[in-house]
Image 1: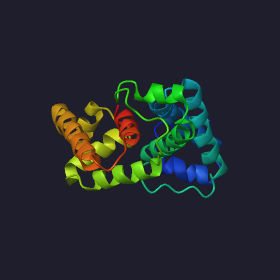
Image 2 (image 1 turned 90 degrees about the vertical axis):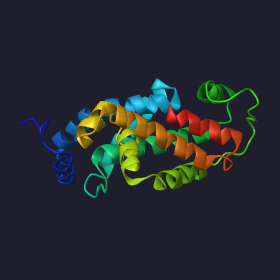
Image 3 (image 1 turned 135 degrees about the vertical axis):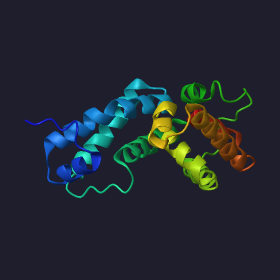
Length: 197
């Protein structure tokens, strides 16, 4: 059995389309840890994070012959992780214990737990904020958030200073937060602030 560790993601997707189990295993080995880590950050639950990542890979295998990825594979898997995490948050947001977990450092005690929440609205508003970012800042932000690259990895990829990357991400977050100001309820803003961590 040949190692596929050197094979680019795009070729792995083509191999999965041909039902190559080894390609699927390589994608799993390449991305599961990053996806699980991201899911734990969002859900504050290792058990739920593991279930979410497993669900994504089961879905990936079930759709193996028709799978198409329009972005990079890493961005696709991270976005899938974020979407399932948001669904989990939406299902559990009204349980006091869960709400406490995700808001403990983001908002004060005046949060109204019974407030109506629309995570789809939140994502749409965040996407609009991202679309308004200057081109280079948006590129840096998306590499940081969608592909979960470190500041160092982004700096190397774009051939810019790591300090520049950090400043661009910080400025992007401020611009996005400012664009959301006044559009979201306290609960929605708490979730947004949580997702930025």
